[in-house]
Amino acid sequence: MSISDQKFYDKVAKKFGGYKSEAIHENHFPSGDPEEIFLEQLFKYSDKVKTVLDIGCADGRFTLKVAEKFHKIFAIDISSEMLAKAKQFQEEQKISNVNFQKAEAEKLPFQDKYFDLIYSRRGPSPYIEISRVIKSSGYYLEICIGEKDGKELKKVFGRGQGFGEWDISVAKTKTNSLEAEGFKIVFVHDYFYSEIYPDMENLNLFLQSVPIFKDFDQGKDKENLRSYSEKFSIPNGIELKRHRIVIVAEKL
Ligand SMILES: C[S@@+](CC[C@H](N)C(=O)[O-])C[C@H]1O[C@@H](n2cnc3c(N)ncnc32)[C@H](O)[C@@H]1O
Figure (tube, rainbow, N blue to C red):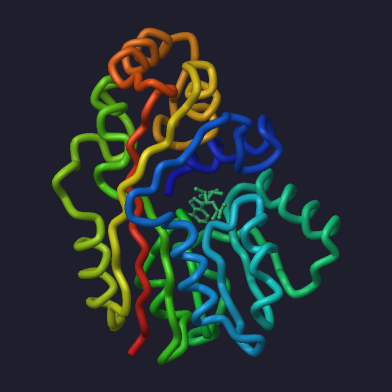
């Protein structure tokens, strides 16, 4: 990832006090909540003796939430501002088995075959490096953005994360890459769902806090947002279609 990603996440952490926004929305999950499934899968492989790596931990709220299920979690990120929030939350919650540190996912500061389990929750996923630091029979879990995520929104804006790659299956690309690095795929599933924002202001607030458009500008993008909001208005608000993928793989 580039320096602009680092800057983007530093800016979000400063503005919103972590990786979050105050935008109000409802979710509609026709085939299950992917975040719940990811957590379920993670707990399936959790163990108090396991040493874990969290790649792209951001403000660490998720890391701290799952920490008690493991022996020790090393959590890395490139954003100093996100890590500062993570350390603040850790101190407030008095959790001692998590080690937050600044590192690049592509150059992990750990020896070969160090981790029993590695996960990336919408963070980077450098499989060559992950394959190097995971033990044989260790598990790798990932929840990531699918190719159809926010497709209609990106079409109206004429840009965005993964723009135009609607027909290239992320699940297929990722599972092929994992297999090439010596992993066996244990679980892979696509989840399509909707977020419903009560009005344009809440969708605007949401778009400032996520990398869908890293260059989102509430002034310059006002017309794009208005046009999308009109087109995708439903009785209880504005619909945004999302796509997530959950993957579990075992290192052979
Ligand atoms: C979408 S956020 C992940 C959110 C977090 N995992 C959670 O559960 O809330 C992506 C994070 O990955 C970090 N990141 C992006 N590229 C990175 C890289 N090359 N190395 C380490 N961290 C990176 C960003 O700074 C950001 O905090």
